[in-house]
Length: 432
Ligand SMILES: Nc1nc2c(ncn2[C@@H]2O[C@H](COP(=O)(O)OP(=O)(O)OP(=O)(O)O)[C@@H](O)[C@H]2O)c(=O)[nH]1
Ligand SMILES: [Mg+2]
Image 1 (tube, protein in one colour):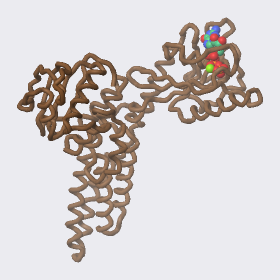
Image 2 (tube, rainbow, N blue to C red; image 1 turned 90 degrees about the horizontal axis):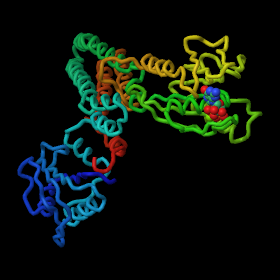
Image 3 (spheres, rainbow, N blue to C red; image 1 turned 30 degrees about the vertical axis):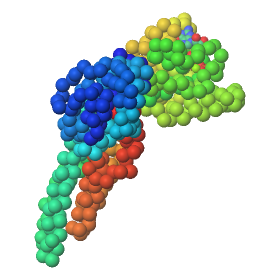
Image 4 (cartoon, rainbow, N blue to C red; image 1 turned 180 degrees about the vertical axis):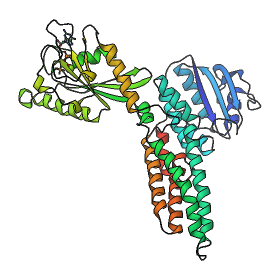
């Protein structure tokens, strides 16, 4: 809900045309032509607005049902009045969150991965996110999983045919021997699909980068410089930042969540609030995909430098000051002299972040999986197939294949997923 030039009120279901007729006084469902119509309240005939009325007769509509859209002016009172008039017909109610998409799913218009792709498309903030979501909405991921499932079901049919001949000594063994190499091939494809550096998941939810280091090193200043605004308080007092401050950025199409944290120093030098802040800082550092360790290039404690496994990039800040130097024991490849005051050196830092992303999430053939739900399912299917490969009895091997195909069926929503649906559709807004 908000103010806009145009608002679209959508109706879906068998009464859509009847409701539209009551508001417009005309039959709108005949074709897919947009027509300018005056909308009136069905109770007292009062004029509500003029707007376009556009009908999509089922089944060739988004939901598969008859759909009518009113394109009215986007003022709050206009939308309220039109919704009120729609309710007054007694033939319609407000949709629940995600209900249009859920009906589309029920009508077989979209599989579950496409539904998720649509939700991601609506949430997409960067260009790379948009491309990935659009691919998934278009069915790329769903088609891959469906094709694996089809192959599995084909192989399963072979095994089951073999089971019919368990009485004959060599038939079952021959069937299993014929099927196993094909299962191995499928397993190889699944393993490759899983070995993607979590690219799709990172792109969907954002790469998390924690800025850590001693107090007063300029961590908040680095965050502000990268964010291009004064998101965090900067002050000469050591221990300024206590809470973790998060900023979302678009780095070359990749969504990045930067968090500024409290400076780390011995507990004895800090009060209770700062100690809690440092605990949060350590948690943020542990949970991050990447860590930027910031030190002050004028005052640093060489002995106090963290081990190279505690950060991905070392930023030696305040290079604008004369007394600035790089610590002698810094590892050259990951060390960057910067000034959060002048912006010097940040070009190299941004490049290093991009390279790091490329390294941890190499670009491979699409489609990539984008959610933990997908990863767990493919891992589950793979585990079932592995077990099937070593099963002695043909019946047991068949059972493992059946399990794997069931798991794949659940990812795309082809088999019993009632429990999953509420979770997935809950992410949607009303009216989608
Ligand atoms: N000359 C110079 N001063 C800087 C630079 N970056 C930060 N400062 C100063 O260093 C002081 C500390 O900066 P902050 O960004 O608050 O440091 P911090 O690491 O977030 O500090 P805490 O939140 O207390 O841990 C401030 O007075 C900044 O103005 C820089 O590149 N050059
Ligand atoms: Mg700070």
